[in-house]
Image 1 (spheres, rainbow, N blue to C red):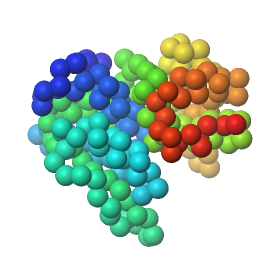
Image 2 (tube, rainbow, N blue to C red; image 1 turned 30 degrees about the vertical axis):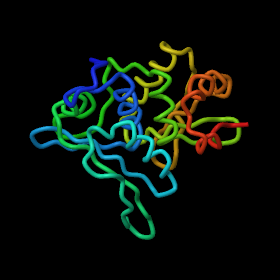
Image 3 (cartoon, helix red, strand yellow; image 1 turned 45 degrees about the vertical axis):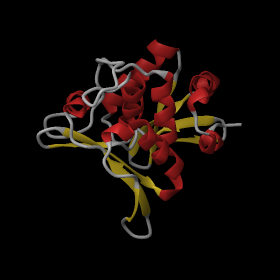
Image 4 (cartoon, rainbow, N blue to C red; image 1 turned 180 degrees about the vertical axis):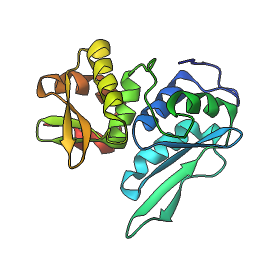
Length: 195
């Protein structure tokens, strides 16, 4: 992935790119017309994460995050960036021509990427950690498993959650995973770490 350390309107810093990639591995969405935009949309319970992402990308956003009534009783908290070429290049890496989210083969799972992904769409179950990858095809989940193994020596399995698979960090790799992400976790998300 091309990374820039220049922070002009037309470019993203390496940190900003890693935050966006973490969001895209989770619930982050993108839409495109001429240029792409990023949408961050969570329940109000994840307000701290949305505010932190907004603060990190503020130069690319026109309006602050807003509370919105969602389906049923869900209260959403969301914002979108402006449509810009810098997001279009990320869109082309993470989305197919028909708009389906995919995993780029060149993906690097930096610790910040993993931390954002975990805060966004991770969970724990006693001594295990799960990443909700159900939106990705099984082959792409296997690619992510290989990336975990090759890049960090982290062993994973695919765990069936109702009808779909998700990634489970093996118990013997949980400590390694937590050590990588802990410096980047917001205090409000420490509860997700297994004891």
